[in-house]
Image (tube, rainbow, N blue to C red; front, top):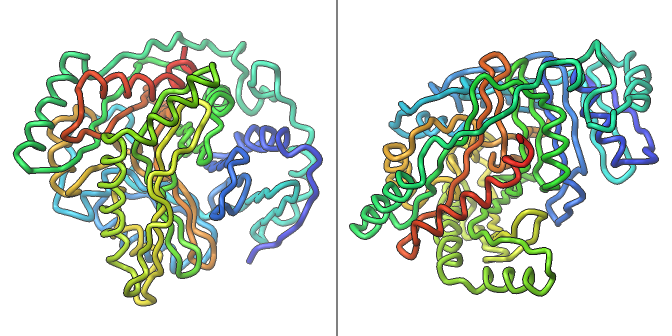
Length: 442
């Protein structure tokens, strides 16, 4: 069904930029970049999938079952996303908050053309119908020019920043600081009553009548973040520019791997201050409590499809440093029972605990009441299925969403509210997480 060709790449960093720039000619793009962040679960340095042969796009009604049938019928590479509001398919829930982005609840496509880069080894997989285009495409990619301002070097593909009127993007806060503090206080009341132990509460920054160059903004975001689960995603006029540091779930044979992030600390230019910040995060009782509660929730989620006694916490509260922040990450694994499918593993763990809270259902209901924006793709997941049914998905955080047709730009940030939370500190954590996106959009 696919033809595979192998190439040696002299300059992988430059090639990655040329690859995502060349991909702009297509209606559908998924570009995944690990930014050389390697752990025992890494599969590729970067992946580009373009040009849908088939696709599925749907709202939340029966969405996971539709995806299961699509994945099991195609038995091919599929790339796409699960929006947060698929929670409404998993449980009897609804989403009535404002939505300025208008993304579908679920979208996956079977690409005609795939590029898989590991080190300097490139594997190109084309559907047989277009395998005669491989050499021509590879030559175009290698000759692609990126101007100094990171815009495209081909006007017939997309105008450069100098050739279209780019409006000044003035991001506005959907929830004022005072309103935010009041809402967090309400969440604390729920916690003190015993309704929930923890909730991830989010707020939106947005701009209307905004015209941006998505590729240019993505390259800047990636440059200042260099996150391990970075994504450039495009479905016609809808874009995701993601610098996510978090893996939601990976399937490798019978093994499932989840790596929730809970716990954030500021980075400093001074090495001594930076190390102090990192150590404080590792020892902070509130941050550790956040992480441990969600780790326990993920253990419970994974147990729903696991073989007996195979759910293991491989690492608890490990601290990792990224360009913008230090993060506390735990790793939980399990072995799947053979009666369950790949999509079953996603459905029984969705939405991810790090973006909801504990207990999950109660937390989801409460945050839906207090948040003022439909989350949509934010705090959903982007990733891929391989032909053998394995998959890897990130958590959509630290991400800019853009509807080019509506000229609407949005990003959201959040933090975990526990009994130890101080509303003012949670607000400051949100601003810290917003820093990179605000910098890119200025």
